[in-house]
Length: 192
Image (cartoon, rainbow, N blue to C red):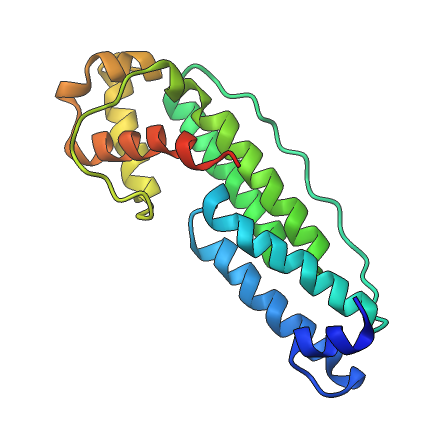
């Protein structure tokens, strides 16, 4: 990318405005990943924009110092309440890193780590049939605290694994059933 193309891409007139334009566009892209579910089909275009943003910034002489994306475990317990809690804790750790990321490279690496975490967490769902035929809005994030509370109640009843929850799906509260259905559908949206 030439310097002229970089100026056009960043929508600026002078090289002196490059830092501000870079930070503004980076902030907008980070907000997308922090406020919306991170799915490959919705992230793909934004990841390409991050690469273009970084390329344009560097073409104008900008330099960055990417930070290391924290390594998060992709292993989960067979106890679904523990897995669910660990998944959200790890997901929040990665989202916090994205929030403070100083550059597009770090954001891109963080989003890829989030996608890998999502794939690892939802992989057990592929062993099960559909949860039920009710429509589910994939973009609506369930209330994590409510789901954890309902999973705890199910664990008290002896339903601790995903398989036992699935086997007794007709006796689950509707909110929990919808959250599990949503999670079961994620696998369809996480791969290119």
